[in-house]
Length: 490
Image (cartoon, rainbow, N blue to C red; front, side, top):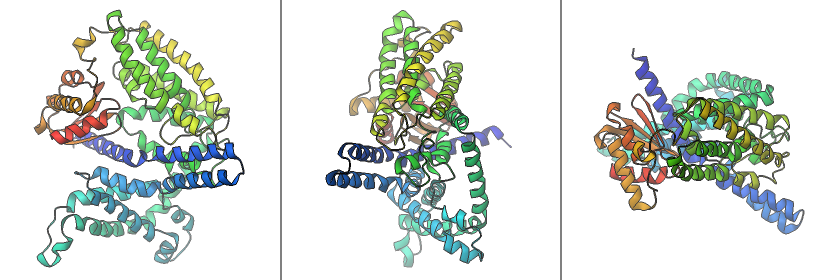
């Protein structure tokens, strides 16, 4: 058995799931903004009638998104896994979710099993995990049945119309073993969540450490799904934004709060250290790159442009970054200084959630962040110089090594970059699957040896990761537009 090839395929599939999750997750900032403004109106308008009406209107609108995260996952994952991203795949994901959650509801499960002993487990069946499973079923059903032609008498139900029908049958089949598997799985997940929650602030630190370590593989979404979305004793993000009955002041938010000091201040400090340690002839170029990356990290919480600038060039720095993130999570949870976000830990989310009743001592987070800015700056600078690490601008001329790319703006420029990216990936014939997330192009290639790192960097890539036939090209926040251009060319 080719274990290396099997591992590569598993990793590639998990990355596809992670990419598919980004579509529904991208809806959360809208809900966060609505609820943040709603909390702000409550604090300003108090108990006045107009304040009550406006805040109720906005908070309810935001809750309309938060409360249906599992359903969004079902539709989004199915759409993301479908080879052509067709809307019928999303409908299939929703159908699968409705069938599964209905057949596994407490009343139906009790009738089918002849006992209501596991009513508690089945009462929590409407969760993100089942949503993701439904999306996986819907997406693969679309890929398998969307082109099937039925006999003439049943021709109306052929092709895409057949997909939701087949999804419902597959979901029915899956629900049978789940009648027995789910209570065991639910119990295990609850125990895991309780174990982590029982570790208190230390558990929050562990979460932050492993979350950062999984970023390069694109698998951090799986960890987030358990601690942010699923109701297995944690559901930190859902509880925070929705103020659910499970939310506890001084506890809820501990798996998010510690990111604010790191994203808003720590990583910009690392960026400044890399600017100051760059060679003189490259300093201006490194500055232009790092300033933009630091701006994105501070305001929006998008950290990959900075993280990938040193992840592969100097992995020891990334390990330090993961440890510092763990320390920040531990400190924030210990004080406690807690807040949450709908998108990521940038200044926008911090200010929007300041009026959330579950935000505890949130104003301390920027103060903690100033300390981490200094730690990141001096520690990164010391380690870079002490061990002569090859961070951006410290090896050769940046125009020669391809790290300096022309600004990517406008449709014509995106198409030009896309053409170069395709060429660097070995040409159209070498690309077997293509997708993207917020900052990366995710590609499966037929022949990895045809991938040209230098050509991809010359086209504007910050870094390239390759595992077997799976290639990730980090291009920054322009990924969506470049990906669209690539898909048009393909």
